[in-house]
Amino acid sequence: MNIDDQGRLHLQVRPSTQACDECGNPGPENREWQLMDGRGVLCRSCLSRWIEKTNKQLGAIDPAPKGYKAQAGDIYVQEVRPNQWNLYQFIDHAWQYLFTISQAEVDTYISQLQSIGETDGSLGKRRYYRPFHPVLYRPRRPGRRARH
Ligand SMILES: [Zn+2]
Image (cartoon, rainbow, N blue to C red):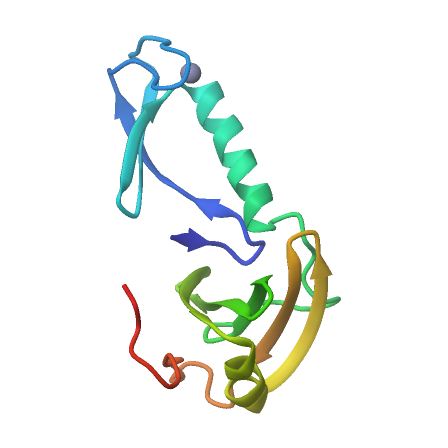
C-alpha cells in the first residue's frame, strides 16, 4: 500500500468498461482499482467516496508533528490498539506499511531511534523517528519472523 507524506492513500487505477461494483453505473468512464490482493471496478464518484473514506481510516486527517517534513528512511509507528503498533517507513516518497509490532518492541527496539515527535490523532498515537542512517536503515521485525 502506498501512502504519501500526508498519509494519503495512492491507488493504482486504470480505465474500465465494466459496470461500477457499488452503484451499477455502466462504463466507459469507470475505473478499475487494484490494492494489494484486492481489485474491483468503481465509477468516479463511488471511487472518490471510497478513497476519502479510506484516507480517513488511514488517519490522513491527523497532523504530523509541527514543522515535520518526511525524509527517506523515516519511520512512524501508530498505535492501532493496546499492545499493537503498525510500523511505516517513508520509501520512494510514500509511507509504506511494513509490519506490526508489540508495545514491548516499540519500547525496546523503536525507542533506540532518534525521536522526531509524537501526535495524538483520531486513530491513536503516532510516534515519528529518524534513523541515524536513514537511507540505509531497513527495519526488521524484532524477535520473531514476519507473519505474512
Ligand atoms: Zn458507482
